[in-house]
Image (cartoon, rainbow, N blue to C red):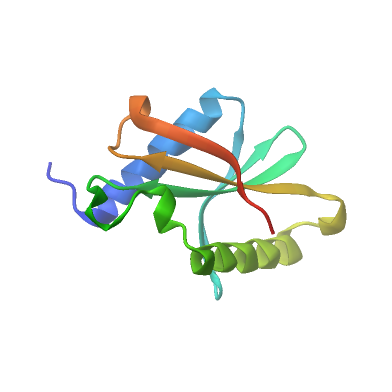
Length: 121
């Protein structure tokens, strides 16, 4: 089966969720959408809620996967996470949170780079 961009992205997200679950995180929600944007994965790491951006770049012609998480993208992720916390979490001020990134140059469990605390709010 030939993967188009959307299918490849979904496959990368599934692989990222599996990878992170193998490292002890628990999936809360995949592909959370709101008016501010989308968060690929929201997972629980012990007592920390983790908002995860998954980036697959099979061609670095337009920059690396890490470089594609621009300040504008970070701001959208922050706004989306804040909205999620307002809507879904009762004690949002007492909830520890962080933003992680999963970077891949191919959709394969052996080609995953996990960056904890990829950026700060």
